Image (tube, rainbow, N blue to C red; front, side):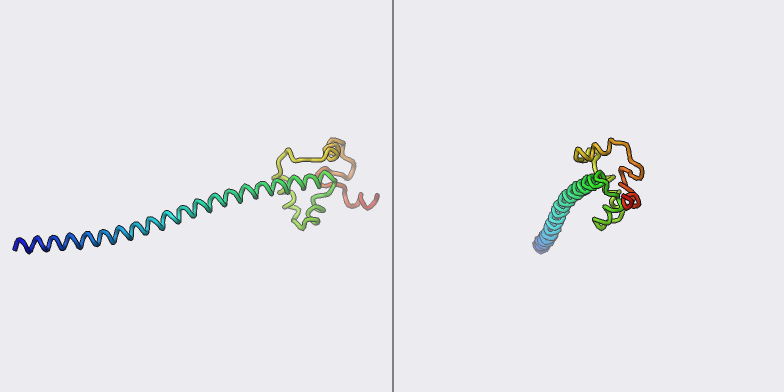
Length: 133
C-alpha cells in the first residue's frame, strides 16, 4: 500500500502543478492586460496634458487679439457680434489674456490719452456718439 500512496501523492502533485500553471497563465494574461491598460492611460494623460496646454495657448492668443480689437475702439459687444460670441465670452477671453498682451504702439498711445466723453477703453465709443459724428 505504500507504493500506492506514493503513486497517489505523485499524481496529486502533478495535478496541483498543472492547475498552478493554468492559474499562472491566467495571472500572466491579467498582468499583461493591466500593463497594457496602464500604458494606454499614461499615453492618454500625456495627450490630454498637451491638449490642455494647446487650449491655454489658444485662449491666451484669442484674448490678446481681442485686446487689440478693444484698443482699436471696437466695443466688447461689437467684437462679440463680429465673432459670433457672447459678450461674456469675449470678456472671459480678454481676462484670460496675459497682461503683457501685444499691442500696437498706436493702441498703447491711445490708452495713455485721457478718455474722450462717451469713449471707454474697454467698450469703445457709444453707438449714439458714433452716429452723431
